[in-house]
Length: 337
Ligand code: NAD
Ligand code: UFG
Image 1: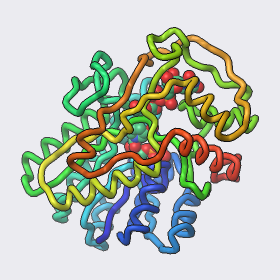
Image 2 (image 1 turned 45 degrees about the vertical axis):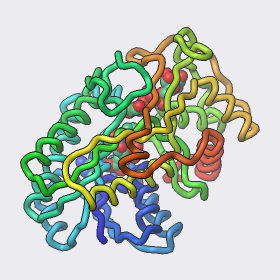
Image 3 (image 1 turned 60 degrees about the vertical axis):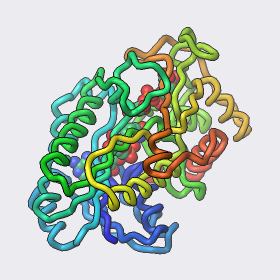
Image 4 (image 1 turned 45 degrees about the horizontal axis):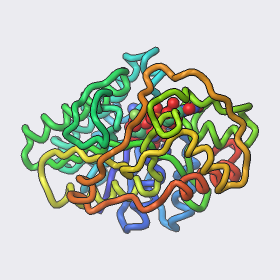
């Protein structure tokens, strides 16, 4: 079975390509390398001992996409390609809408034209409104506070409508919580450009001495120790969730939204201390002000993923902290080194 993976050179995409190759799928990647390095795919091939096909172009390029669908007979698509920086999406919203919506629409068109019926979409916990009770079930109220989030919610709606119009189609909207960690080999991992926005890459780069200190964004939330609580999920568990979603999509029709999280929340200080303890390093940090737009606590109800997909997270916070550090120490400058 041949799978088209858009955005496959990126953080979650590269781990998923590895899992797909290991499971015996044929993999074709399209990525414009806007936020990644083709080196990740070379390492995926090296780790799996198998090869994949890579095409460097923008998913919005319908002519090239059409030629690709003529060249390969895809069973299913996993659509990771997208811009994902929340802050940047506020500054340049039209770029986010253009990239994330038009790439999804181009794929919808090709699915219909070439009879490819299954698609797994990278959505996000950010599609949930901020006033829901925890844990977040898939039927919690939806609503966004930034353009990035809106692109995800709009793509969800487009894909839902597509499945109504095309009853033979099957789409799984995977709502990721906070992916962290890396493959245990340390050969592939998260390689953010510039100064990281997210907690774990900030911690690893501070531990390495590339950044001076971590600022903990607020310690006056109503949580266990006052710092923000999130549902961190190991990227390898997340990758495996995509394989389960593929199997589900191949057996079923219609559109389903499914959370991929652990159901367990950890605070910023709990993560920081776990990281220091597991890796025997010190991470200089200060308590800073709250970050605008953050809320106190976010964690998933992972029951639907268990019931529908037969998937649940298996790796814990120590694995996530150890593997993130292993990747960072082996690749202090990421893939560019
Ligand atoms: P990433 O930036 O590492 O990977 C995305 C990949 O898509 C990159 O390799 C980029 O070059 C490529 N890309 C972007 N636009 C493209 C286009 N128009 N054509 C071709 N390639 C394009 O990000 P990631 O963390 O691996 O995230 C993958 C997906 O999951 C994204 O859609 C993201 O929004 C979503 N997501 C990520 C997180 C997270 O915290 N990492 C959380 C929720 C959802
Ligand atoms: N944090 C710090 N200091 C930092 C960075 C983060 O204290 O330097 C804190 C944040 O305030 C928050 C927690 O660490 O409490 C996690 O923050 P991240 O930026 O790592 O992640 P978010 O939960 O804000 O958002 C992430 C992705 C979004 C995605 C969302 C899904 O960035 O794209 O998870 O839940 F939508």
